[in-house]
Length: 334
Image (cartoon, rainbow, N blue to C red):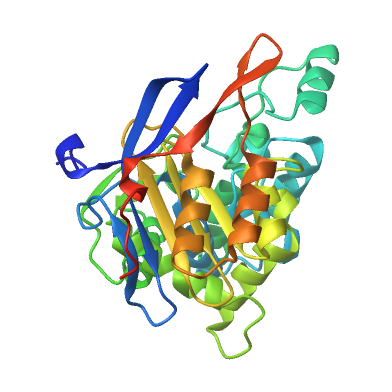
């Protein structure tokens, strides 16, 4: 099985250096309206993709359905891909302690913190890589707490045949509104579901609409609200997902290999996949699509893009920028 091909993708962004286009990013994307209709679509939105860690919020919902009594920052950390700061590791450790477990129970890989102060502090103290510092350690800790609460084995919690992972796949299929097309293994070692961009956007529409919404499903509202209330645990202070979440007052979650999803309070959403796996143009593309569809004000989209997008440098000087690709030249609202 494979994802969509270059022939079915479109040019979403280009990279210009000194007036010369040196790179082109092709991919596919969809904007879903609050009523579930497709507001905008470019490329192939039906062929399955691996959403990578953009699925984390729905894995967190599954862990909570299994009994993990996550609260506030714990939910945001489990639903995010954190930078491994000491604060992030502390929250992941607290989740494990709730389950009467230690970091030894985690089966995500050991990693150095992406947070530089924490990384250098670990080095100075003579420590090695830490499983708690891995960006999905919060999700894994939540998995384990769900297993403990349900009386399930913790040693095999990453097996696709484990009751928890079966529940995770069922939860993803429910929110995507489509069957899981393929199951692989994510970078963190957890089972990874393949769904279409349409299904992924549908899931984020539901999630976004749950922000502080007492009429929404309780688990959805709890997870969505925590991600907006504690965005610094979804990625990290100053990081793109966190900054965009703060600026949009919505849910923003990136995934490896060029995936980005945004869910707004209105129930509108966007899902983007870059075929080359690059994340550098995803924020620009997602914000532009939301603006074109009328779900974010043009001035706001441009302002936020100005914060999270960075110029192309030549030495220390700006000599170019990432620009929207040819797919936007004649893009029409659906």
